[in-house]
Image (cartoon, rainbow, N blue to C red):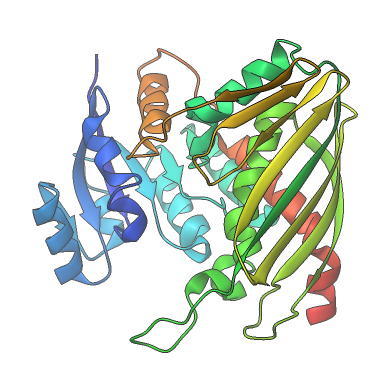
Length: 329
């Protein structure tokens, strides 16, 4: 069995616990190089995580002969650029979510990887987590009958400025992230619904900047139409008094309630009552998806999160934000 050797571009906060250790803990997997524009920070990361090599130049890491696959953990503004460079170097790519700032960039990334004959994976790691596979299992086994509709509600307190710089984080700067926290957080829920219920065929929505603290939208409502005939609605607000996160999938025989980001039990409600499913949230939350990528590259399984599925989520977000973006021009 081949050991898959990884390199990371952008070894920031997300790689400290969520993803980075997963490359070292997964079977037949090894993290051999990391890159950050600030070389001292890259060196510090490499030292703390026992990584043999570090770089302050992405091109050098991409072309390192000891790196088999590249994980792009930068903000979305750089996903397309680095993916195209990896494809040109003939190396598979694992890119953070959202896959890019818009569907057009996703299409370019997919085409480049297809032309180069390399795999493209996206870090929608919930597709590999036991929590969401339990929801899918309950639905696929008919526990709530025929699916009728889904509702999504997420609201949270206003994002705070960085204490040192006095600036808002890149996640609410559209030229870097593609939008606001909707792009960052709603993408997870929309992708997991795509996984559980099948692709969303069409969406429309309204967005606004109610608090007017930054340029990006801070409230979004949407209507969803799935290819299967299931209908859905979503509301996301990022300037609320409190935090709340809940999804409900309603069928002819019951419903399933679960959060996207929390760790509380998945609830199955039928005429027989409420059944909770307590599922532990892993510390290194991307490890299970990383393992599936390693397994696919070794010919053992097919990873559930690809450039094709990741691009579908970007396409739906583009449809939801279409009118807001047009009005901002």
